[in-house]
Image (cartoon, rainbow, N blue to C red; front, side):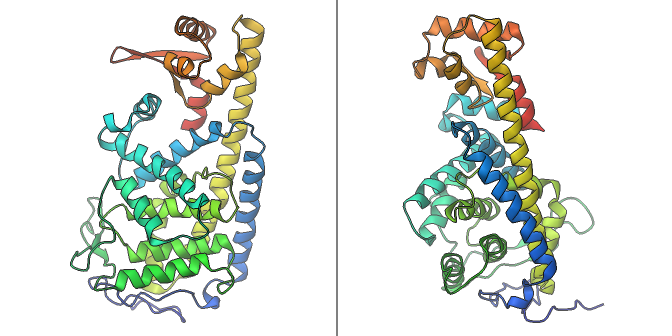
Amino acid sequence: MPVQQIVNYKINPDRERPWNELPLLPLDESLYRTVEIFEHLAEAKAALARLHGRSVAIPNQGLLINTISLQEAKASSEIENIFTTDDELYKAYSNNKIEETSGPIKEVLHYREALWKGFEYMQQRETFNIDYLVEMYREIKEANDGIRPPFTSIVIRKGSSGPLAGQTIYTPPRGDGILEEKLANLLEFMNDDTTYKVDPILKMAIGHFQFEAIHPFRDGNGRSGRVFNIHYLTHKGLLDYPILFLSKYIIDNKDAYYHTLAGVSQRGDWKSWIIYMLKAVEVTANLTFQKINDIIKAKENIHQAITLHSDIRKVDQLIEVLFTQPFSTVKHFTTAKIYAENTARNYLNQMVEMGVLDKRTINGHHYYLNIDLYNILSE
């Protein structure tokens, strides 16, 4: 049965050929201005607003910056089949030496660096540009190149080991000036809210497809596009910090992610794609909201336990460090000039005896795991 094309959108007729005819933005409004899409948009906006309101009420934003963003980095990398364990990741992050790591751990930590470097980059600018996209790609991939040249042939094939493994599912555009033209159009659409009056969450969903369809880099396009999503939401004031755990939803609904992406290029089915992305925002905003509440509650409980059942001094400062990342070391407290080395070690060991922390010895180094924080992040 032939594929039925949805009107008002020119689909990709041949997956084996570069889609140089990828339509420019904006879309025909009939493709996204529907009652069903607006119903999902209302739910996504409400969830995001609730998350925003909760996060700004937290005095120490580092509590979110170093925990939620690290989980986002891990999940986004897993979408690209880059896996690491929580223990390995948190230990490497606690050492704060990316250059001494390697393999999947290094890639995840570079993704997290891109989250924060891009966030700071956009705080100084009014609009997104190609330099921003290239910087994010270079940070994520630890690369020095940029937009892929016209001679580079990229083909997206189906993974796994099933009967369709290796089958071409999409060939992105290529040729002299083609990527640059389509990126310029995408950036104009995302930046110009006067000419293109589209709700920012809808713009994010539309822009994410367009970025992935353009596929501007040799590799790392998925992660670069997901970083762009979060930076766009923060730049538009929908979040104060890039803490939305968006990749968690994609991991849990990975087949639907790729199916709805393909649905746009092969059938012009923007409705399914946009609803998928709106649902991702809604679900992950609620998930992140709940994680923040759980972290705050755990923080309060541990603070109370230490205050009532120990002689530990500077409890407020101690708690801030313990909840900045799951693994702490003596050095974290001495570097922050909270305690002397022996005092920090004694206090940490005392909290191990209280059941607040779990002491782990890895390669001769001692790490102290905040058990409750670790469990909340791992859920």
